Length: 236
Image (tube, rainbow, N blue to C red; front, side, top):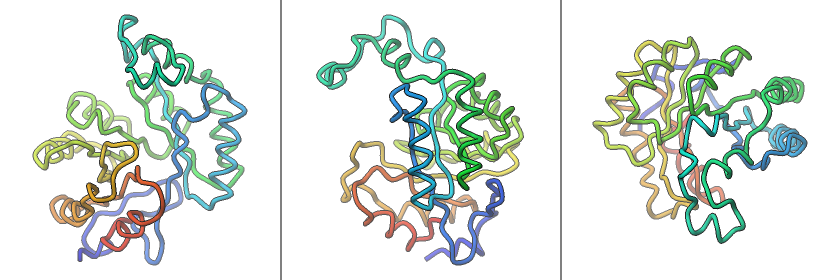
């Protein structure tokens, strides 16, 4: 098994160093589960902090930069009572700009680090201006090399998910992030929920060995089994 303490270049996320001896860095995913409700978003911060998570992570985006107004929702989204078009659906999941500073301050006061995944450069720059120590990059942007290059120039650590990516695509993404002050990867299986038998956690030591940087586990499975397995295989 790869020893992450001796095999990788550590990254700093706020006051934390990853990897760290006898510790695991846990990010609680809030995502868009606030449903556009700022009070619910604050409640998610409280729940993450109470759980002992090191960080709580949201998603930040501008719907008009992501999808066409003509983009239809999927059948499962419509079956759940969602909008008939993707832009309206995303607009219902956005928070006002001032909410991000409120959530950052709330998280800091609650003893956890505030993080987010930006889906466009304007959102990324706004988050950097708020003082976030790191930015998450979704699996969907793994092969968006121009975006990764621009993100790497923002002066913060990048945390890049690798769902659906080949080893060659991951290598190209790592190279595109060369200007970032720190880089970590996440092994990820892009299924919701992800079947345990498809998680292939041995990718974690494989990517650690290939790139010499921290490789975590972006967990979409129910329960604790794969998280424990990921840590046993070196996820920091």
